[in-house]
Length: 92
Image (tube, helix red, strand yellow):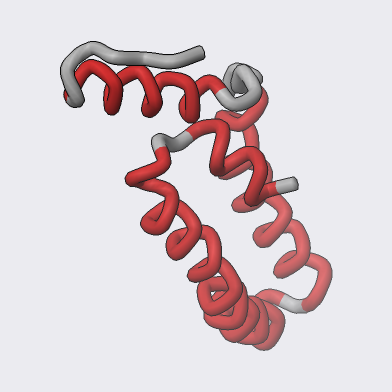
């Protein structure tokens, strides 16, 4: 589902960068798990859970305002731009 959404939000020429940023989330998650261990040692497991949940909510709230993409709209736009660059010939 995430890959499909990324393809709807990005132009075909930008999808490689978008996919690599998405894939980097795995390694960022591993790094964040190390931070949660430090939080647990310093604050205790209950407060460290609250801290991590608070951080996640702050990062998630802007996603509620992200508009739903139109399916395949970026593909159609890219085809139109390529056709205009090739001399205005576009076949439907």
